[in-house]
Image (cartoon, rainbow, N blue to C red; front, side, top):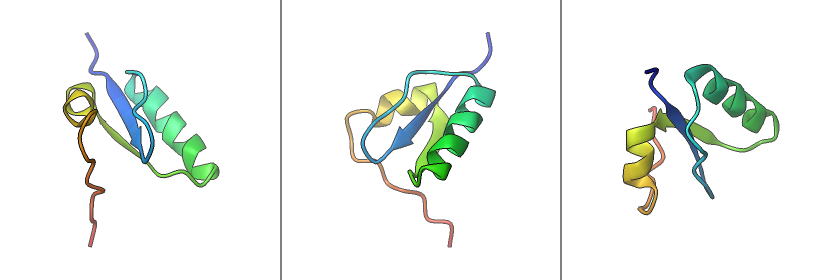
Length: 58
């Protein structure tokens, strides 16, 4: 079975989807000015009801 991913935004967590679907969805969010992060389905479950720490790339 292929690995599934979810997209975490400031307000929600998406349904599980394939890698390519997740990438396309994040691109759509970006065009709308919405920040979205792709995480594994397992990580999505872990952070679903907790505070999501936005990654710092600096």
